Length: 589
Ligand SMILES: [Zn+2]
Image 1: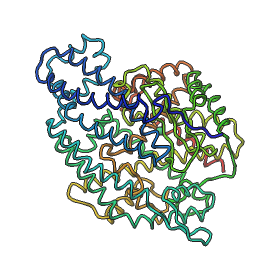
Image 2 (image 1 turned 60 degrees about the vertical axis):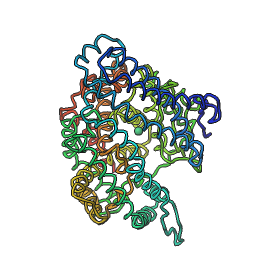
Image 3 (image 1 turned 45 degrees about the vertical axis):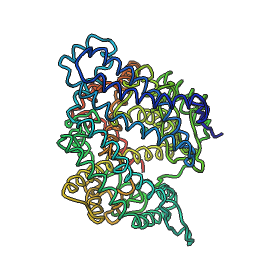
Image 4 (image 1 turned 45 degrees about the horizontal axis):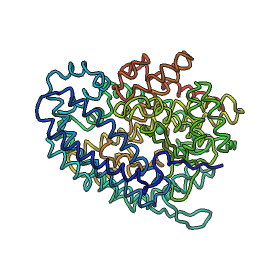
């Protein structure tokens, strides 16, 4: 049976007194903190008390925003036409941009305090938030003056944010003309892209060709949006004093350049293995000059594993229990208390996500479960995100905010538990299918992600000198795909329009939103390898690691598990696990 999630733990409705009162106190808080910083952050009296006041304010305020914003966003996600909900989201986002000025003033003032370290040492509250405070102070040098920051935050509404909304409207309303069994049809883009998973080869090929043709209609406008967004990003990064956009992204990700470089080198080394996998898959599907792009997600093998939602629950909870009771109980509780919105529905968002509701120590999961093994694995993935939230529930709101690269650790870890369990209990043919499913979801995270990283690097380099034409963007994309996939893909069937298809390129605040996926996958695989070696003692350390992700940089988080992110051996050992799966896959048929 399908499950609808319950949001009444947040609010009973947008008309309820609780919601209205919280909106009022949200808007009042913004006004209050703006006045408070102006009055207090202009002299060096009583710094300890002032910083404590600010930290307490932020923790309380963030929990309030978490509650209000999630209520609006979650309501919209299952009913995208809910105008009341989307207006509330927009209102909250707009009001939040009014905080730019006061947070700039506070950060600069904090950075101007001479003995900040010893002040922090003398207050338990500040000591608990020392990472957050030192990070604010350190990054204050990248802030412009408060009037500029305020102006910029407001200008973004009509600049990069508006371009990004345009791109969203263009791609979500794009209608693809496609002929199926001789009949001309019109489908939305998302449906046509889903045909990449279809059993019928002709449909997959047809869908790919129709998809590429449809992009022609929005290519000019998309290129315009992309050029504008990246142009704004370059101007801002330079004005703030960053050496490059990637430095800016790494600072935001709490990751250092050395980690990125070492990880990328290990990924490049592993490419020949992935190419072998693509070639083998091509052969199995009857292609002899590499895999065409449209076959990347083609199903291989012939089994029909089907799960009801109840069966998925039993399977997940049982196998999570082999890891720990805490993880199993969390998942069981999520099913028992309707934290999941399970089935596809008209007007509901596609895909899947998990929202951690720190303010009420719960989580909500959106999925589009239809019963495939892939759907079970997606549920496990999202429950992993929720478990991460559970491990952070005792931390303050400020100490629960973790950077992008670490975000996929717990989710991929849970996926790995589930797929290993499934392989262990499957028939030979089923095991083959699950293994291939696994590799085909890891391969894009290494190989396609690498192509996106190469594309974005080149895009930023060229954008410094002016806008790029549609043809240039297509050329760079093809070059990036050739460099990453090599002979694994058939060079006559690549995807020159990936820059229209992936929304990540259009988010001005998350540039290079590609390498964090690779980090997440490889960090998580590396931890799983440790788990297999050390067993029970691992579980406790793992929980401690997850609860520390909001108050450390990545190198220090990893050190908690004796992982050295600067050592190429660590990355190689994670990749080795996938390479072994590939060997196994190749030898199975
Ligand atoms: Zn995820």
